[in-house]
Image (tube, rainbow, N blue to C red; front, side, top):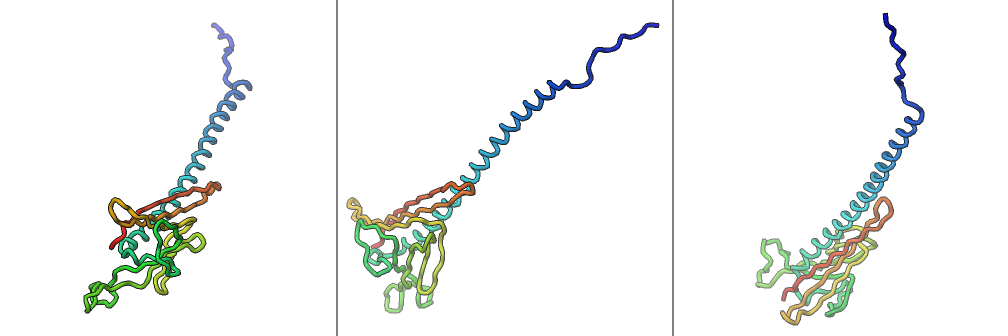
Length: 189
């Protein structure tokens, strides 16, 4: 009968092997945590930037849709002063063609155009406000700047209203994301 020699093979990990394994896992875990933190911060900043862009677009689209219907010469400040060329204003007031007598047409019985009540856009704090008669509507939030300037296009012989709106939204991590939009409207005669 032959006897087997005891095996010299180990069945467990030594303390050094455990420490090396823990160190490798810690480095990998730390790198993953770093990338998660950076990614989360970028996501929050991107989300704030998207919100700032959305507010600016909503405000701009709402104003431009109505301003395109305004007649040149009827563009005034809320105090009633007619706009001067190449002068910046922070509010606007105008009228648009509208069916005011309810007959389904914007022309009255005498053949004249029917005009709406004055429509105004202005900033109240950080809100873009649309006002018409006694109706007040918040169009956009986080608005920090609003500017209207009429410039003369000498090549075409027309006047162009440039509208600029700026919004700022603070991200969850405190970064301020800014969005500025400018649009031009050829004024109707």
